[in-house]
Image (cartoon, rainbow, N blue to C red; front, side, top):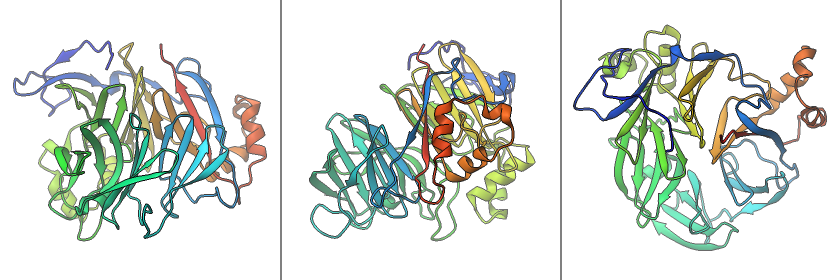
Length: 396
């Protein structure tokens, strides 16, 4: 990662101060309470974005979907997975529907289920992880079936996000499990899809036959670097380098000795745990999601009362920003669901669009360009697909 991060020191994570610990790796430490607070990053803000634009996804009988669960962008093409219909729908970056990807079924070259999918850009392939067939199916990005690799491991059903690191490694995030291999992040061998390396594990098992996904994006890739986060941790870890970045929000509950007893009180429910920690404010909830561009690292976290916030770190300037109004109905920067290179993408769903349209604050409305209003005014809330808001982050 190209960065001007210069404050490299060794720390103990138990307090707000950064102390020397010879057993730890090099860590950049920053208390985010010392960083600038900003109410919101407004759509079109030239201080942070090169450009912002909306993608109106075509709505037709074939292209309609219930919700967006996963997304990939490759060669000006959007691959969007709808978990309710278990279909991957393909659009161009103008929003025009192209096709459904592959066929669902029990036949040759077909899939029965999808826990996740990913694109191998070097080979121009798309791979579907299919727990019911106990296989990973490989297709060209145009949809031609190539082959399947069998794998009977039960963790296939837990994989929620996967990305190709290089020809030898695939990084994956998993949902929680009630079984012994309760892993959060692993590295797989692309030849067999067996686990090569465990990057992190959840601190306790889920209740029997229950699973949860506390994070939709616990790792981010940019160029040849990978950064990842761990559950209830304020630390950003590097996959390739022996370094970490501690963006401190509060006391670490994992090192306090209170986590297991609190989790037991809440019947090991991950979401109730995060809500309680957030509401009480004694400990940090850690970061839920991480996204990265050439210049910025975005960290999302729970801030109490079912409200999320964002912390944006400018790697070039070594400056951080606390984004307080992060989950509003306005078409501003927040609730990011996908990042690729310097693009951060937000799903603007019908509830948010409706609230924005019915807003009586004219000064707020007038601060947005006509292109937004033209799309919003013509949006069919009963039938149209959600909109995508794309923020192209500043490069320099």
